Image (cartoon, rainbow, N blue to C red):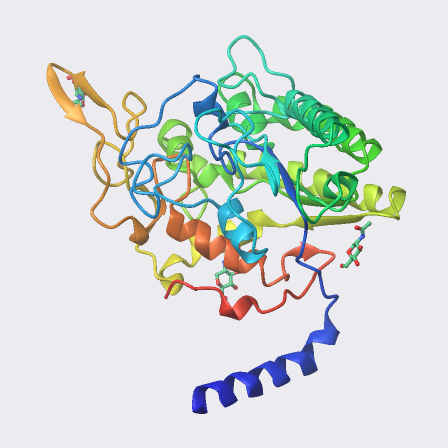
Length: 380
Ligand SMILES: *[C@@H]1O[C@H](CO)[C@@H](O)[C@H](O)[C@H]1NC(C)=O
Ligand SMILES: *[C@@H]1O[C@H](CO)[C@@H](O)[C@H](O)[C@H]1NC(C)=O
Ligand SMILES: *[C@@H]1O[C@H](CO)[C@@H](O)[C@H](O)[C@H]1NC(C)=O
């Protein structure tokens, strides 16, 4: 009884302060997600392009779940917060994929710009949007034939009231650094965003009205980039991240933010939310110990030991012969102490922290105040 009263008291307090911020209705009949490995729940693996082996998925799923993580991704925590089930991957054909609450088109390695012969993933943003168009057409066909798609939601509402989420762009920049100068990469950003805008327009024309756009994180802080491009200490910033990569990410984000502002003006009948993932992630890396982490940059799962525990020749979970000796890239004993999981992707613990920050609404434009973000399980 005591606890319950306290709870009601807190709720009453909160509701006094709630009207200060725009309140977001965090209830959607469906979610359609587009992106790269940051939100891939099984597409690249489902396509047979790559396989993921243990220790991927060692937390929460206990098996490699098609995710490039030891456990859950940001999108998983956001789905949880929306009281929706985890998103099934469009290309996941085994078992009974359930698309009643949406579909995930994100695939690891994907770029906004069209894929080239050397791309990891052929599923660039334009392809993912085309996959959505086919998905939508098929759903409407089935519904026209009298098949029930969702017991409660008419098919049109599913697409019109659904939430369209985006987390893509990181690979356009990170990949370019292998062959281009910073100036060339910066000069290419407007082209990248034209392609992004084209995809958003298609989805709008198809009836999408709720858009949720994540910006790009500080890719200069990813272990892989520090290992490859940070060997000269003058290339690193005060956090130990590659400055050029972070500069490019910031410039992309500046222009992406401007684009969302433009779209907010153009599509007055829509909700378009820009989420500043960059600030959340760089705060985590700068102030990691405050959030319960011990390693901001060193990979948990990798080979080579400190300071980075990353070797580009051998990826997490692989066993290979290096210099005549068989070695395995293994996981650290406690991945919750690490921000970085495998040198390229964040750990579940980091994803949980990042999600809790997203749900405060403070990093969004327009900002929002979620129902009760303090009820999320925070890591402390
Ligand atoms: C936009 O969000 C508001 C609540 O934040 C909601 O009432 C409205 O239906 C949404 N607009 C569209 C077009 O879905
Ligand atoms: C780290 O925390 C301090 C104190 O709250 C804050 O001023 C600073 O901006 C944070 N660092 C980053 C990179 O966000
Ligand atoms: C392999 O040998 C090279 C050259 O001798 C050395 O630089 C490198 O550290 C060795 N790598 C491993 C994994 O032992």
